[in-house]
Amino acid sequence: MRKIASPLLWVPTGYFTMALGYVMLTSVTAIMFKNLGMDNGRAAQYSSLLILAYTVKPLFAPFVEMYRTKKFFVLCAQVAIGAGFAGVALLMELPGYMTFLMAIFFALSFIGATQDIASDGVYVTSLDARAQSLYCGIQSLSWNIGPIVAAGGMVYLSGYLHTHVFGHDPTVFGPDWIDAWRIIFLLVGGLTLLMALWHWRTMPQGARAADTPSSVKDAGRILLDAFVTLFQKRGVWRMIAFAFLFRFSVGLLEKIGPFFMVDPASKGGLGLSNEMLGLIYGTYGLAAVLVGSLLGGLYVARRGLKATLFVLCCAINIPNVAFLVLALTMPSSLVLITLGVAIEKFFFGFGAVGFMIYLMQQLAPGKYTTTHYAFGTGLMGLCGMVTGVISGHLQEMMGYVGYFVLVMVATIPSFLATWFAPFYHDDGSQPKAEPDAGAEGKTVPA
Image (cartoon, rainbow, N blue to C red; front, side, top):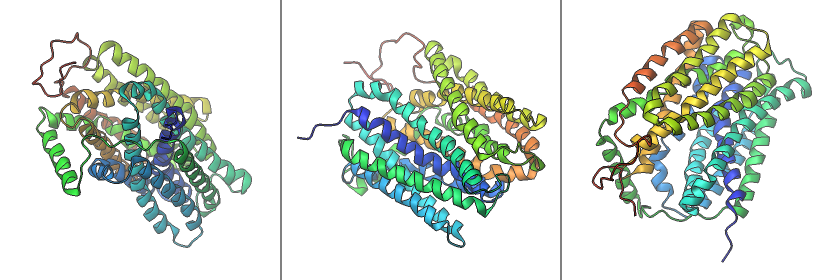
């Protein structure tokens, strides 16, 4: 019997590969569209539509469980994503290439969502509870390296290639950017294929879950029952409002923030190069997110979620004013620009932990804990998609200053949804009472 490789050989690379594909599709494409001369409205809209597959992945997750092994789906997905990104690089030479690109990107988003389902399945079914807890931090850290490489390294490299290798003007957006972005997609495609080869050697097969459906009919029945039981939960509509609205203002800012950085001063932007954008967002910004997430987790662990949730909501929303300040003052100092981004990202990381913990503790408990948690994260993705689709068009209508004022007004629904978010389960801040075996989400310890 073949010995199972150490999780250190496949957990970090597995989650890095997941994040690399996701960030390239849903974030980096927006910068590419902008570089190629697309207006803010379409650039934000097209890249945001690619979030759809990741939003609805709970709907097809039961069907992935039914066939072959989880490793099989991981490898197939990674090979397809690698080949797809390489195909994008080749298609960019064709006239009218954008139609083909969007078709491939849309297909790759569903393949990427399938990779996420299968990779999570390998992790959950190959490791026992102790090992899952042990490698959880490595899993999270490895995922966060993906944005560093994609939104930081690849965006930086695209600007370097465009300016210093191909000799083009970095301030002019248009077809000249094709040369640099073709190399970027070839690199990402090749890296993903290398990861597939590595995981073929190191990743375990992944066991079948105890509740794996045996037929399409059975999978559909389970999915329907999961929906029904979700809406039977007490206070579910307030939980849904929280899941959708907690990051509403952040969704409006996610695509427009980088556009503001690279747009010239004549359009109200700061006129940064792709190199500086990649450096600010992919290194300093992401480092601030990681530090903020760590401190936010410690803050919640010390005081409990119920006592801290509104503070976390303030942390994730109020610092968005940094972009309004930047738009009003238009600083030329890279230190001040970096500081503004780092402040917003630090408090985003600090506050965002509250969202995930709330879903785990309040929305997920019950018969279908994993599925209901996935529905909650799907609502977060839906919010990001909807706000992203409209964000570019609104910014073009209002200008950057007016739009960032709108972002601050859009924090109000987040505050209301958080204030009225219900707590029906223990948040860990109180001593444990005698367990009630009849209560939903409660279990009697062995």
